[in-house]
Every structure is written in C-alpha cells, then in structure tokens.
Length: 567
Image (cartoon, rainbow, N blue to C red):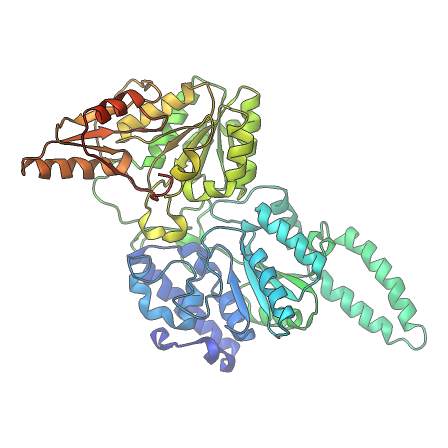
C-alpha cells in the first residue's frame, strides 16, 4: 500500500486481517526508514502498530476520541490520518510535530507531551459527551509506565466511581522509557499471567441463567463464588476493585484478539480497562532487544546496523557531565543519593547506579513524590540530588514550595534540559523554571557558562548546607573547553566580568553567553565598547556588581533563554 496516499482511517474498515498484517509490516518499515534520518521515538511506535490500526478500524475517529497519553507513540496514528507525507520534517521547525497537535489534524483531540494526563482528559470529555446527550466512545491509551503517575491513579479512582462509559487501553510493554519500577508494575506482572478471567466468569453466568426456574438464583450464588475465585486465581484485580470491567491480558500484536476484545468493550455501559501486552521496538532488532531505554527516542541511526550517527568529535553531554561529577563526589560523601523520576538514561545516571546501586533511586513517573521524597532524605542530613527535566519540574511545583523551600531543606535540584530544547517541541521547553523558582524563599538558582564552570557548580551545590540549591543545564553538549582537574567552590551570589566595556553592559548566563560575546565583538568594530557579565547566579543576584554597573549609568541589556515575565 502507498502510505503517502492515505487521507483518513476509513479504508481500514474494508481490510481483512491478512491485509492488516501486511499493512503493519509496511508501516514498521516506513517508520524504521524515516526515523533513521530524522530521529524520533522509534521504540514506542514500533510497539503500537497493530494496536493503533485496530483502534482506528474499530472506532470512528474523530467522532470517537482516541487520546494518546504522553503522545510520543502517535506516529502510526499520524500515518493513518493522512500525515505520512510529512515525516521527512518530523520534529523540525514548522514540520510534523512529534506529539499530537490539534492544528495538524481533527483526529488529534488532545495535545500532550507529559505523562499521565490522558485519563483525566478522557473523563472530562466523557462527562461533556453525556451532558450534551451525544453518543461516542472515549478511548484513552496509556502506558504501564504512565499509569504509575499519581494523576493517572486519581483519574482511575474518579472514573471508577462515576461509572461513565469509557474504554481505557492499557498499553503494557513493561517499560515506559526505562524499565518500570514500583508495586503497580508488579501488579500488572501478575495480571499478565492471569488469563481471560473475565470471559470465563461471564460465560459461567450466561450458562447458569439458562437453567429453568432456578437459573437466576444459581447465577447469584455463582456471583459470590466467582468473587471468591477471583482472589484465588487472579492475584490483584486492582482495576475491578476500582469499578472497571477488566479485560485481558490481550496480545497487542494479534488482530483477532484485539478485535474480539475491543468489540466486547464497546458493548459495555460502564468503564472498561483493556490490558494489552505489546513489545516495545517490535520489528527492528536493535530496538526490540533494548533493555534500558536507549531506543525509546533516538537521533539518526544507520538502519542496517542500528549504529547511531554521531559527529567525529563532540564535547561531553551536559547531563553526563553533571551526573559524573555527582558520582565523583559521591565516592567521598556517602550522604549523596541520586533520584530520578523514570529518566535514568536521559539524565545519564547509569554510571552512578552501577557504582552506587543503593544510593540511586528511580521512583517512576512520579515527579511530586520524587520531590518530597528528596525533602524527606534531607531532613535526615542526607544529600539528595534530584535530576529532573525543567519541563517536568513544573509538575512538582507545590512540593518545591511547600516541602523543600518552606522548610529550607538542603536539596540539590539538577534542572536538566533548561532553556530551549529544539526538536522535543513546545511541551518540553525549559523556559519557565526561572520565573517559578526565583521568587521562592531560600532557593539558590545558578547556571554555568560552560562545562568547566558546570563541574564547579555541582561541587558548590553538594558542599552547600544552607538550604535548597538548583543548577540549570541545557540539552545537548558542552563547548569543549579545558577542564580543571581539581573541583572548586564558587562563592554563592557572585558574578564575573567576561569582557570589559564602558558604553553598555550585557547581563547574561548559560547558553546565551557566546551570543553576548559575539554581539559585543561586532559592536566593538562599530566603536561601541560593551561589557559582558556572566550573571551565573540568577538568585541571589550579585548586588555589589549590579549596583556598581547601575552607578556608572550604563545602558543595561539582559539576554535570557526564558520567558520575559518573571525572568
């Protein structure tokens, strides 16, 4: 089939299972080829090919709402809704977004990029549907990793209580980004081996009710018996206790099983949870055999070998620099504990985890818990290092305010992917953290000009004992500057002058310093002498230097990779 000619999913209604299997192969090959050039979330999308096709065959999008949690696994959905021809521009400026985007298609009914939001959104849509007297299916698709998020569990509780007609698809590939952790993951593991309990109990009830005269009484007795059997044979029917009809586990790569269960789910009046087992990276050996999450999202790669395309030389990645400096200091300070909310690979903490397994804590997709957990460690004089992307720190704002800053606890927050992030798109931009952290009591906020200053700031943060301290560092690699062998402490709240000038002053920090220096050099050729100040401490400000500049009555310009308000 010519995937580029697809306009909408309606053509799927007329395809046989054999034809759908051929389509699955073609979609996988298309994704493997296209993403080898552009990069992208290949592992999650290869795992949901059959599931996505089955959903679009069984439901009528956009009348029926397909809601993709996180959204990084929506590439197949985009192909089936007429966007295959745009994949050469995936995750590029003015190109195809890597996540659902309403302005791209009427089939994208919910925009996301963060985890665990789909169920709450689906519940809102379901209640709106009922209030308006409409008839449609609301179908959120959520991964087993995203289900560990507190927001998802809150929504499950609400959905089960309200008993609204809603079909939750649990895409269980045993990994979110990295391998999943936590008790709920263990519950799902037991459910995978439980078999089709729900089908058996329904068949039993149907047969008993056919017995003349006493059938209904027998069925009622059997209802009590089957509830007992449930606990005997099926360990942890967590979702049924919440009020869902639980179906599964189902092979997410078998069309016959998917159609049978989806058809059954559509007939139910209350909430249904269909537990689907998929293989992340299916159909491409390097991604399918990935055990740690390397193939969750990638840059370009050589399709034949799976080798990643890298420049001949590149400076160390910022995430690697920070995590390895923490690891180095942890060798002489046993109080240091590293914490990640399901991003050990992205935050480059594998080395720390290997050397200090007891001091490396992955809490799963649970940013709020991770933050207060770090605060709890700090009350016991430990040195927690919370590595978290700027965009995900937003999700734990109350915990930063109430549990860390208010109590003035000594937590080191490593704000990864601070500033503009490029291909990850608008949902992942790290441009708000300065605005929401600068005004908090007791918080110290800093950002280095290069990786050498970065390692010294890590050391400064881990030696600091007077309260919370946060280090911002960008996505990507450093500048390749020479590195000092000995770590130093930088006095809190001090700036430095990088270039002298008498006509104007530029205050800037982090990734915008090279831009400021270049601008100053250009202005120098025009007879304008500009001072460039590395304002590395965003809070507290270097009041002595700042007041000195103001007393000179110089024009002062600031360059920041952040929002204007609150920056």
